[in-house]
Every structure is written in structure tokens, then in C-alpha cells.
Length: 216
Image (cartoon, rainbow, N blue to C red; front, side):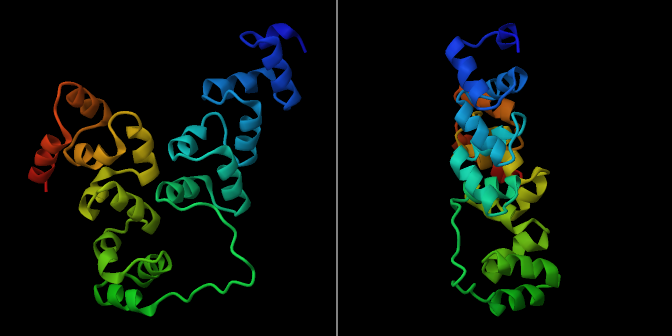
């Protein structure tokens, strides 16, 4: 392998990436994705991430080690990012631990509200209270997405209008405004670029909330 293929790498960096089993093009791709440590890149790769998709995991605040643990638990990348954003951390459950039964109360409440049985079951499995879940379930929002949307401050009606899943929303808004302001700006009808520009001009999230209320 010609050293000229490692343009942009120091001798030490080249040796580390080669020792970790990366070809020059792959090493460059990981570095362009913001992963400068070949050990981290190897962990991300083990977890199923690529230089093109690792940003979703990173913006969920996940470390490569945590990503590997989610992978070992059989959790898909998108679901892992969503659960991580909601504060859940990957951990194994003992084989001797008995899974709690799904409470019948929430399912009955949702069925009485006219929610289809499969949707009601999904919300009950996810630990939702029946009354709390009704507006989200009525709009057929995935229970995991609903949990993250709610944590961000969206109402069920607002989340239904977003048009993307919760993780994609967080990814697209990353760095535009503080995460606690995303719901106010997004529900006011702005995209990340518009919101960042308005914020730079001195418009506050509270002012955006006024526009949000008018759109209800």
C-alpha cells in the first residue's frame, strides 16, 4: 500500500489506522465524519454505524461503547438513538428477571377511546398511561417517537404535523437552537435555518411561542 494514499495523515496516524484495519479511503471517511480515533471508528463499525450514519448516533449523545452495547442487545440503530435521547441506557436484563405483565388498564382505556387493538397494545407495552397516550395513539404516532416528541415539548397534534420521525427531527435541528427550544421554533412553522437566523437577530423562544400558540 502506497503511503501517498494516506495523504493528510501523519506517519503516526497512518500506522494507527492501518493497525486498526482501515483502508485509506475508509479512514478518511471516518475522519470526515468527525471520528478521529481509529479505536472509536472500529467500535462504531461494530455497532453497525457507517461514516454516513454515525451522526445520528452522535447527536443522540451516544458514545461508541454505548452504541456497541445497544447493538449487542439487538436494538436497531434508529431505535437505540431514540431510546438514548429519552434517557434510557443499554443494560442487560437477567434471565432470571421476570418481565412485568403489560397492564390491562391502559389497553382498556385506549380501546374504549376507539384506538385499534394493535396500536393500544404498542402503547401499553411501552409503558404509557392510557389517558396520557390517547392523543398520541389517535394520530398513530409510534410510541417511542411519541415519548421523544413529548420530552422535547411537542403536543401530539404538533408532532403529527412535523412529517418526520423524532430522531430525524433532532438530527436536522442539531446546533440550530438549544434542544429545549426546538419545539417552540418548529411548532411556530420555522425550519432550522430560519429559526437560527431569527435567534441571531434577537428573537427569543418566548416570542416564537406566541407564533406557536397562534398556529394551534
